[in-house]
Image 1 (cartoon, rainbow, N blue to C red):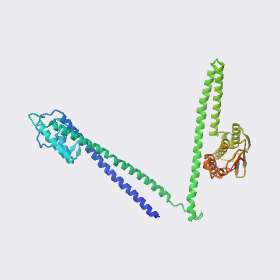
Image 2 (cartoon, rainbow, N blue to C red):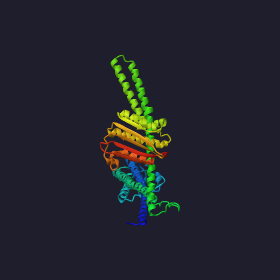
Image 3 (cartoon, rainbow, N blue to C red):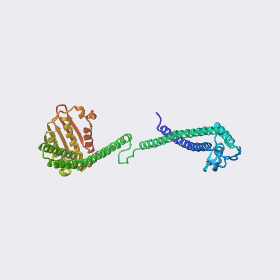
Amino acid sequence: MMQPSLKASIFNSLGVLIVVLLFLNLFYVVYRLHYSDVTCEQSLLARRILFCALRPPRVEKVEPRQPFADNSEKCGDCKAGPLPEIDLLLKGGLLNGKHLSRIKNAEIAALLQSLRAHWCEVMRPPQPGASGLKDFCRQARTLNDALMQRALVARTRLKAPVWSVLLLACLILVWLSLRHYFDCKNQSPPIADSDGPQSGPENRSEAPLDITQEQLRELSEKLFRVQDDERQQLADELHDGLCQSLAALKMQVFRVEKGIDDEVNRDDCRKARQFIAQIIEDVRRLSHDLSPVILEDLGLGGALAHLANNFAALNDLKVSISVPDLEGCFSDEAARHVYRIVQEALNNVAKHAQASLLLLEAEVADDSVCFRIRDDGVGFSSDYADGSERNAAGLGLTSMVQRVRLLGGEFSLSTKPGAGCTVTFTVPGKTQV
């Protein structure tokens, strides 16, 4: 196995290599951009040559060796003919304030020489265009096609280096992220002072574990807080939005019912109003379950008793409630966690237990409160109770355990097939979450 210093050296060398490759690709991209710009300008000159070739020639005195490369301002002027463009492509020069390099391709250079010779022949008085014009036009089209193809190829070859630069930039970001991660990971834990525990091997190995558990606890706390906030928002939307809309619908059906003379249709409207009223009641109950405002009105003890009574009425169960006054035992945050734990336990009874009797008990001790939810249902395998198959049981039981641990309490579950189930959890009093 490689030593840590060797690993760090290899990792840093890899970063330097990526940076060097990135700069080389940037230089190559700049070169390809310049080359693409030059090919585009050359293609534009070839198009001007073709345009001049297609216009009727005008009689003028043209010297066979007259240079126009240094007179680029005459480019594009059809009165001067295509000679400025041809000589600029052959010898290079300035075009619109930019330096244009000459054509280095031997075949294209030979084609330009032939074009210049044909044009001089075409413009030879007294009969301009008498000979060589067809060859000049044909060669002008060939030149235009060749230079346009060069420009397209240059533009296409520019894509690969640009993508390479983007890829290397992403690799740089990944490398920086990994380096930051390893730097944070390799930071040594703080050394305890002389009064605290010594920084021996055992303490050094336990310190990261303690930090991880604390981070997990904070994460669970934030997760449950966000979950409760979302439930509160959804409950408000159901109560203020959907319930109000259903109430307006109910009033509208009542108005329609008053205007109907047929007794059969009036009876249908009454049934519709009753059905809407039941939906409104169900939505209100769902809103209250999502956001237990009853905690603020009745306190934790009264809210748990109200929750158990409503649960028994909805599921046709007998219920026995023994919950004392818990005023002042918990903070608001802890009381909401306890309420959610009991609520989840009752939901499990409704979904799986097939019970006929439910017992809800709470016992206050000196420094803790013990809650117990018991049913006479079908129960389930002990593998779920000890947590070995908790994943198969869903997230409800896991959520209950996490909330109890967040409160600093203890959770236990006792069950077996055919003997019901008992959920017990103990929470310290005056818990501040």
